[in-house]
Amino acid sequence: MAGPGKLESLSDAACNIEGVRELRGDLDAAGLRIGIVSGRFHTELTSVLAGDLVRTLLSRGAEAKNILVVWVPGTFELAGAVQKLANDGGFDVLVALGAVVEGETSHAQMIVSSISHALCDISRQSELPVIDGVVSAPTYEQAEARCAPGPESRARYLADAATEVASVHKKIERGLSHE
Image 1 (cartoon, rainbow, N blue to C red):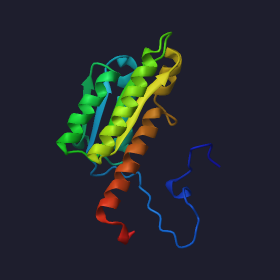
Image 2: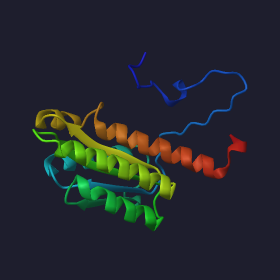
Image 3: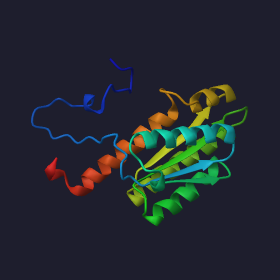
Image 4: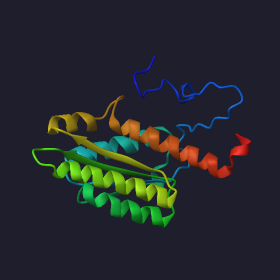
């Protein structure tokens, strides 16, 4: 059995009540138009995260020509670029990437909270899925571990989340009566 919050497969999520219709996404990224906005601050972390995210999306069937990676100075600047891409209308899903190490002040918490709220607002206003891929950690070592590639990587989770939620949105747009 999978741990808390983890599924062995998408079909494991079910309410198991007879007669209830359920809608699930899938992990097929074929045809998806994906925008990724990444902060350059801690670029040694965000570059690894972005690269692993793109490789995972490609392994799920996305085409390189349908993926755009936009670089901004830091995590705080993510929202403005994500908003511009959302307004463009050419994407099925957007992913924001950043790395914030807490340090000894509350500045990091303010950045993480602000960007999280902004990304939620952009998603609601644009009716476009926006995935919050900002890695926040108390130490640099923990941030580095969360950005590292591999089967349990944060990038793989973000790719799966982006693909699944974009799939759900497309199914809803096609109409629920056919599911």
